Length: 213
Image (tube, rainbow, N blue to C red; front, side, top):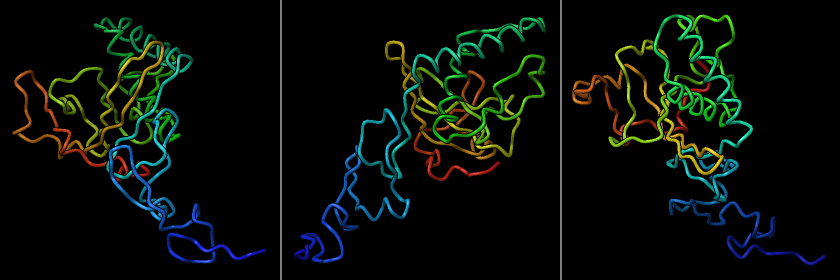
């Protein structure tokens, strides 16, 4: 069998399609090489991202499909019913938004949905929203930033911002970035409506999200 020479690096050890120096491009236009995938700097796309390669600076995007949406709606209703049973106000749409965002993190990282809520569980005694941290989800955000509230109490938890967009019976989710609660509570980010708004550009990249609580 004749020897094959790579036309990218002139090596005879591999075909061009396997060359670590072969150029690749992210959906955002960033350029890299196959070696970036091998070292973990870049990653393969998740289902629904519509891209061959993803660079570290791009948020994680995925799709929550109808069957998954139905599961989220079930737990949103359980949360709503629990609050009503305690004589508190409940906004089912708000609970659905929260569940979609939390599920997106669970799906992206294949982690436990620790705050899913179980029947008989006290809402006040629940764990983090997910094993990877607290989640703040929104369908629309005119401030282009993540909201943090005075009632947020997990100082040791990463707070993850998930932007949502409904497309037919699917929900598209974008894991934008994250921040520690203590660093997100800056006076300059305080909003007159009663919460902090952490600018998108000040969030940490998702690739830096701690692996364990």
